[in-house]
Image 1 (tube, each protein chain N blue to C red):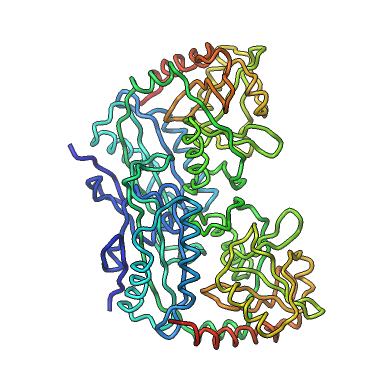
Image 2: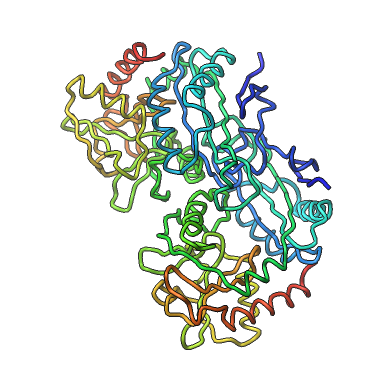
Length: 287
Length: 287
């Protein structure tokens, strides 16, 4: 079966899925995106993803490429046409195609929309989660508007590639105060020696992760000891547990940060429990 | 005549010039670019532009999409096929097409190359230069690697759009120390009340502009009083003259910064002379 993508009004073969070279996403990183988890053929947290897409578009003053309900329909169509049971669906919206000029294009230029989907192996993810991942710290060097989910991801690419070349699967940004801000494409969490879950507030400096929000709800529901505050890299080194959250990785235990083994070097009980709970919750809310 | 673009080995109609949706330039801003002036059918400062392209690619560890000489040939072909006499030629190189993943793609993924050209009116530019432009200050909010000419230009788009909406044609970034770093797509210069030309060193925080370098040579050749040092926005407000340089605008006088009229509100003598000299020098070196 050939993969199908949706590009500006048409379902096309993935191999033929193309945008104009003067699409502002290509020349200016002038666009935003979302990645939704597909779980047993259903989409997880779609309303939250579309709410965040709405906020990203609004912050950049890009219009919706079509009605929100139509976007949601296309997401489901692309998942269905690609027969994705478990995996993810990706949506990108840019400020459209216009002669290259930094200034916003004329009002009549329509935003571009691209939707793709692909399968991912729950078994592989489970195996990874049972092993945990290593993260590698990296000096925070992104612009302050990381609360907007833009495609200007080059800094993240370089931070994550650095992690990979140093044996890690994720980068953890550390700001000038020594605080961990977030991962290259995940939110960062620790469990202190005292058993308190800690993650940074999403009021600035990080993206308000959808999975982060969903995990926060589980934390509250379970009545786990929790503090929403910045934490330092040193505190993370000494933590009992660490983990990251994202739609693509869900709750993924971190067993090593730089050269430091976290806890006993195995996925922690809190992270593992949250991952299990997350799946149960997902079963209920995936639609 | 229909416009022609060069995309990954083929000359195509501009309307059909497309890249895959999983080109890393589109999804990650993982690419770099150059804009060369076309002057009387010839290209200005090609060796310098290709040197800088080489540095940008090298900093990001992206390979050349083809031999440098071949790239230069394509630049000239695209200019010729579009019958551009005066205007510009644009080249973009990205890390290529690969399944979406922040990490660098496998070694066998070839970089993408796109080249476009278009005409610009020297008469319109001259009229603009005789009038001067207004610039609008903007808080520096880009990542520190602005010395690399990447397509992660969303912050520049927003700064320049803000300038436009406040009556300006360019944004001037001002850092936390109150110093002007550079324009949204130009380098920034002033002439102090004492008649000293000032521009910021290109050792960090700005792009090493090709036109900036060419103007620096003219400044030296003419023996003009000159200091390469940071200057503050306040100093710029009180300057005798101000101007910006870029391959697209050459030397463009600035007659207003925010609400402050610069000098007598007309293009300054130093800026005007440098613009004239630049054209003469360009006649000699365009090839």
